[in-house]
Structures are given as C-alpha cells and as structure tokens.
Length: 543
Ligand code: G4P
Image (cartoon, rainbow, N blue to C red; front, side, top):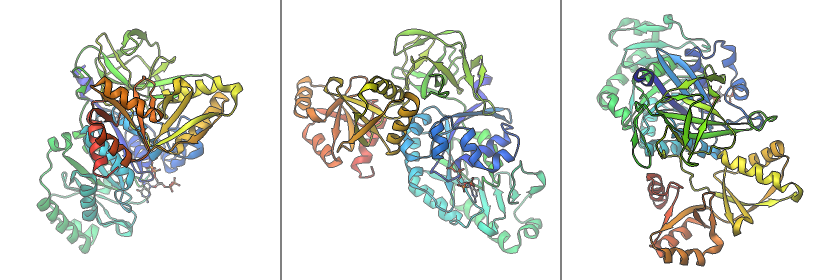
C-alpha cells in the first residue's frame, strides 16, 4: 500500500487557451509510452477529437469542454494527468478538477507571457497551496526575453520562481536548453516528433567547456555563461520544500511542439512532485495510508453514449483501497452503494480495473446516485472539502418554449446541472428557474445538449444580476427581515440554501455594510477559505 501511494503522481496541466497544454500533454504521453506513433501527435486536431473529448459538441467547437484522465508510467511512477478545459467559460470545471490533484504544471506562451486565464488559474492554486511547476513554451518563436518572462511570472502570478532550465537563444536563433541542475545541454533540432536522441545532448562539466563554443558559437555561449552567473547570483538555490509548500515555482523552458525541454520537465516532475498527501474534511484530515477507503466525486460526464443514458462519475481516491463489488457508504444519502464496474484510463483508453489506490482517479458507472462533491467512505461519515460551487456571474431565467416537452426539459436541465455545467436557482416555489453560469458559452452548450440529448428546448431571459451570494445569519429575525425586504432577489439553490442576487458589486457592498448581521458567502462551502478570499479579492477591486 505504501509503495503504491508513493509511486503515484496526480496532476493537472493548466494554461490560457492556445499556450500549448494539449501539445505538452501529448508529448508527456509519448515519453510514457501512452501513445506510440508520432503521427498521432503531429496534428493536435486529432487529439481534440479523439483523446480527451468525449462529447460531440467539443468536436464542433474545438475546445476541450470536459475533463478527462490520462494515466501512464514513467521511471517507475504511475502518473495521472487530469485534463482541464482551457476556455474560461468552463473554469468552474477546472477549479473542481484542481481539487482532485496533488500538483500542477502551468504552461505559458513565451510570446504572450502571462495571460488572463493564467492569472485566474494561478489564484486557485495559490489558495489551495498546490505546488506548481511552470513550463514556458514556444521558445522556437520570437518571444519575450527569459529574464523578462521570469519577472513577469513572479509579479503577475504572485509566486517566486526558480529557473531549473534556461533557454539558449530564442526564435530563429533558439539553440537549446541548459539544464542548470545536471549541467548538460539539450541541443535543439526542430520538428522532433519522437523521443529525443541521446546524441542531441551535450554533457559538460563546466560552462567553460570549449565544446560549448563549437556547438553554440562564441556569442551565444558567452551569453549563456553570463546569464547562468546572473541566475545563480539572483535566485536562491532551489529547495524542494519551497516547491512542495507552494512558495516557489520551478521554471522550465522549451517547445512542446518540437518535443523540446519536455524531458527535463518530466524528469524533474517525477523527481520532486508530491505523492498523494493528506486531505481536509469537515471533521478531520484524512491520510492516504489509512486503511479505510475514502474518496470524492469531482466530475460527472453524462450521456457519453447518446444511445444509453449513461453517466460516469470521476472519483479521486483519498485513502485506502477502492475495490469493485465492495460496499461503500454514500455519506450524503446515508446509504450503502456498490459498483461492479470501475474504469481506469491507462494509455488514454477507458479500461475496466478491479481496484484503485490513493491518488488514482477512477470512473464509476452511475445510475443517478452521485453528485459532484459527494464523499464515499468505508463507514465513517466524512465530507471532503474544497469542491464548492462558486458565485456565477451571468444569470438567465429558463423560458419553456415547448410546453408539451417540459418534462424532458426538466429532466435534461437536472442532469446537466448535476454534471456541473451550470447552477440552478429556484424562486417562487419552483415556478421560476434561474440558471447561473460563469460564461456565455454554457448557455449555448445547455441549449445544444438539451436538444440533442433530450429532445427538449428552452430559451433564456437575461436577468440583470452579476453575482449570487449564499446568505446566513446567527439571528433568525435579521435573516427573516432581510429575506422579506429583498424577496425579489432571493432564490434557493438545490440544497435549499437561500441565495441573494446582486445587480452590481456596488449594490452588494452596500447591502453588506447595511446588514452587518447577515453573512454573504461567495461559494457554497460557507465557511471556507475560498469565501474569505473572494471577498478580499472583490474589495481590492480585482474581481
Ligand atoms: P492548448 O491546448 O493550450 O489550447 O494549446 P495547443 O496545444 O492546442 O496549442 C495551440 C497552438 O500552439 C497549436 O497550433 C500548436 O501546434 C501550437 N504550439 C504548441 N506548442 C508549440 C511550440 O512549442 N511552438 C510553436 N511554434 N507552436 C506550438 P494551432 O495552429 O492552433 O494548431 P495546429 O493546426 O498546429 O494543430
């Protein structure tokens, strides 16, 4: 058991769209033997339609809407990559996936630097103290200078960085990367679509080695010596604990498309990234070595096969062993539940497995019992934290367009909400349904999927709100009074918790100041760090 836990590495690759997340994932899989042919890698259009994209809609839109799991072995480690959608409209999905990983690789485009989505994703990592490695990609293009990029990363992502590799030239003069730790140089050859050859590597004992000048030319080799001197002078020596405690992000440079600098990243990753660790629940911390099983659901895929209404729930194992055919406790429903089919995701194919260990992500065939955030255990009543709903930003009322098919509409909406595509709020004893999302695109996805998967249709009436806050109070009379006075702006979430809709941040702030007995929460996990953080972020005008 201890060995199995120690060899697992579960992480996500995150980036602003187009920075190269898909390409890097493919190259990592290539190293792990998860895929063989270079041909499959060359065109990432293939990836987009066959690898991690389960739903038809993704093929159409060309963006990764769902999260999938890819497992491979490398250097004795069992690596689980959790794919995340890059599009910001689906960032809630990404945030939930980040609750299921032990570390993160952040990809940044060297030409564009830190982009909007990079900053948002990094905020979530900082909040959760997730260890992060940064891969600066597309060094084969004329991009920003490496020092300039390192400073930008520190400033905008609010984390110290420590280069572990360093680029030699860039764009048309890109010659390779220098591995600061191993003191060797990986020479660049463009268009590498297979695992690199040893002959591309130049081992040197010191930067004074004459072969450096022969291979790089005197200009670039002099500059490398100077820059390495500067790095060693400016940055503190790299300490693994600083990375594991999320204080420092090791920095790598390369070109995913050319499979360049990827081996350095992967080798460091398997060397220092964290194995599955302790996880917080509402009552206590759970250690992976505990013999009793526990885990939580962070993702649901519905209707993978349109002919069968099947759903796969993705479960992260947190402690003990998950075995098929055993009875587990479904904490929310307070009943026992058994699964006779577990899916693993080795070599990018869904295959059935018999058991899973902490760190693993498995797919469970679900008949409608499971929801995002559910905890399963062996017997104890635990509730894992960190999988809340966040305040949506766009709100629309559901308008029934075909009353004859309202039953299908309700069923479809319920299923899509359970999948985490959007949030549903109820007003007027269920007569009024309000859908809340973080992006426009989700409304289109909902309409498309309702039509294609449920034969139902609806339209959406825009509402003037910008934020939903869960409200609580110690004082029942204060709560009653607030609810009565603001009854038009109050709705209930599916757990029957009251939610206040605000028309502007200014309005919300004035309500908060005017009603000190009411607590406003920005996530459904009412006392979580998240709500405090979001509040701070909003007050400082960042949100
Ligand atoms: P994403 O998942 O983060 O959205 O990015 P993805 O890997 O799909 O890469 C986005 C684009 O950037 C792709 O080009 C990809 O080929 C390109 N790219 C990735 N890594 C590198 C790199 O190291 N160097 C250069 N020059 N380009 C890179 P595309 O034109 O959108 O797609 P395709 O037509 O090439 O498949």
